Amino acid sequence: MSYLSFIKISDLHLSSTLKTILFKELGLVTLEDLLNTDYSTLIHTKGIGKKRIEELNQSVTSMGYKLKNLQEVIEEFKSGKNGLEVKYLEELGFSLSIASPLYKNNIYTLEDLISCGKDVYRLRGIGVKKGKAIWQKMQELNIPFPKCFDDLDQSLNQVNDENLHFKKSLEYKRCLLQKYKLANQLKSQLLEEQRSLDKQLEKERNSLYSLLIDGRGGVSYLYDNTDEPGLNASSMMGFLIHSNSIKEFVNQLPISKYYILGENQEIVEITKRQADFLYDQILEYNLRKNGN
Image (cartoon, rainbow, N blue to C red):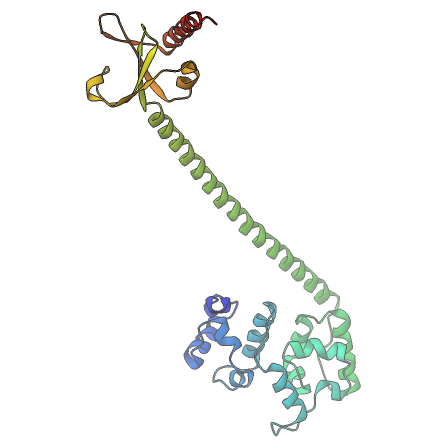
């Protein structure tokens, strides 16, 4: 499926009347539907006249596409196959550099040009120089035609062009600003979620094990934590730790509570600092015992 099928005609820069005609008269919904519709079908559709076909062609052209069989219809029109006695602008002596932008705006004949009138000077691709050339050519043909831009019109047109440029620039910046805002909001949400998860992980990690130290033999028992206060060795599963590197190993584990088994088998809770001190004593004793 082409991505053109996801672009709705309702989203194009067209008048609401033209959108309604395309949907009700031709059943067109997407840009793909429009580009697959023959140009000759469009120009013979009820309600689509010269201005609306021009509006439609400009919208499609601005997106980098063209209406289906547009060139073939133009060539047919030029050759007179449609039965009309008309002459193309080039046949009347208009240079291609002048005629080409007129063709792009759906002005092919002298009749089209006369109907357009002074608005021709405001069409895309028709600047002051080409506007004057069009007026001079019409004078050569002895056809009354509105004069090209006077100084006031030219200044107004330049101001309008500048305003259009600034408007597009502002729209782009507004869009960009909105995207940055959304991105920063998402970033803040993710950072907040990350902080929350880190806290939860730290909380869970800090309560994984309890450690019971037999101070007499240096043996330690590691137990899964429970919510019960103190240490109930008979109700918890644990495993024996007996190693010369026991202190280093224990420091790598998430231990929340330390206990020591006294001489009378009583269990007393101690701090990590006390446990480290006790391990240092046990290791030193083992070293002396082993003659190192």
